Length: 258
Image (cartoon, rainbow, N blue to C red; front, side):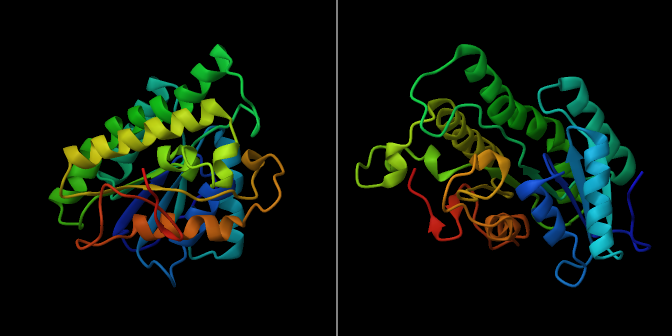
């Protein structure tokens, strides 16, 4: 398996779903760079294990001092989620940072109609999957708090287009784009984030909007930004200390209205 663990026990354990490509891989790249985040071990959660291993190999080719490993996870499968949490428990006994990054966009960016099977699939991944993953890893995040590792951090990768304020503002160009299934799933994800933030007031639980990013999810839209820019705020939220915010919804430009 393509993995590397540092000789010293890692001080910070991070698990990222959907991290074999795109924004998730970029977050893994940044957090596993020892010169920037020393002592971090990043677990690449991947739907297809071989793709996760390939991502880790790429990152290690860039910097062989990174501490990385791969755990397969299908966020639509309770058995897969349970196995992933069990593997983290067996290998590390705790989790310091959970990043719910896995997501899909099945409706076209200008789509106005809904399709029940696609609607259900969108929610299975974007909402139900994030809920089930978070529930499964809560005990491991609590272990990090008990071990005085600092506040556990959970980052939900959401979207500015989930904002009710944005959608209801006719002067905002994002309001004119429809894709209702994706927007609804991410709006619900924001409420889920607030739920977990309220349950764990000492933790740092936040929503991150990466913006329109040059990944397959963007479907070739003009003006899509880089994965490097898309990951910056996620990394910031993943590394918050005790004085950091919680229960917020933000992007690289600041707080997004609900």
